[in-house]
Amino acid sequence: MSDQIQQCFHQPETAPPGILPPGVSPPGSCAMRLQGLESMSDMQKTELVDSISTDIRAFIWCLREHINAGNIDNQHTRSFDDVVKLIQGTDLTHRRMWIRKVRRLRKERHSARESLRQCFQNAEELARKQTSQVRRLKERVKEMRKQMGVLQWELDLLRLSRRRNQRNENEKNETKRANLESHPCTQKQQNVGGQEVSADADGRI
Image (cartoon, rainbow, N blue to C red; front, top):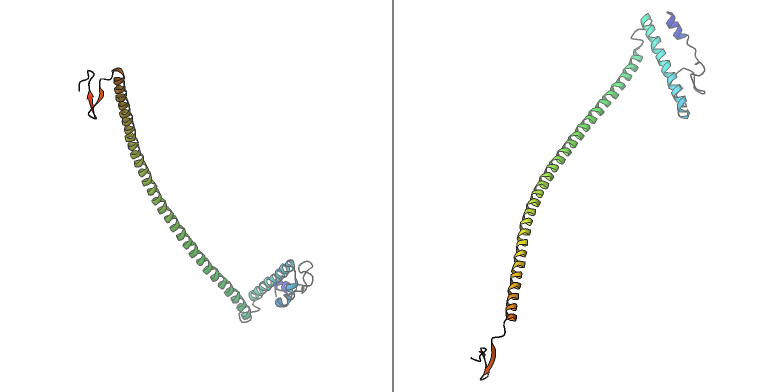
C-alpha cells in the first residue's frame, strides 16, 4: 500500500478545531451529518457543507489511488459510478433546462426586437404622414394668405373709390351751394287760378 493511501486511512476521525462548528457531528455518514441543519446559522451551514465537500474530495482522491494501485476495479466501484452518473445526469438535466431557458429568452428577445422594429416603422410612417399633412397645410395657409392679400388690396381700392366718390359728391354739392349763394333768386312762384306757376324776374309767366 502506498504512502498516499495510508495517509488517506490515517485521517483523524474528528476534524481539527475550527473546521466544524459546535454541535456538528464528526466526519462519518454525510446524510447523518445533515441532522439539525434547520437549526444552524448560515455560517454553520456553509462550514458543514464545506466539510462534507472536503470528505468527498478526499474519498475520490483515495479511491483513485486504490484504483491506480490495483486494489479495486470497476466491479467494486460500480455503486460509486452510479453516483457519478447520477451527478452527471443531474448536471445534464440542469444544462438542458438552462439551454431551453436560453432559447426561450432568445425567442422572447427576437420577438421584442420585432415588436420594437414594427413600432419604429409605424412611428416613421406616422411621422411621414404628419410631415406631409403639415406641408400641405402650410401650402394651403400660404395660398390663403395670398388670397387674403388680394382681397385686402381689392377692399382698399373699393374704400379709396368710395372716399373719392364721396369727395366728388361733396365737391359738387359745395359748388351748387356756392352758385346758389352767389346769384340772387331769379324765379318766384305765382298762384294763378289756384295753381302755382313759375315767373321770371319781370313777372312774365
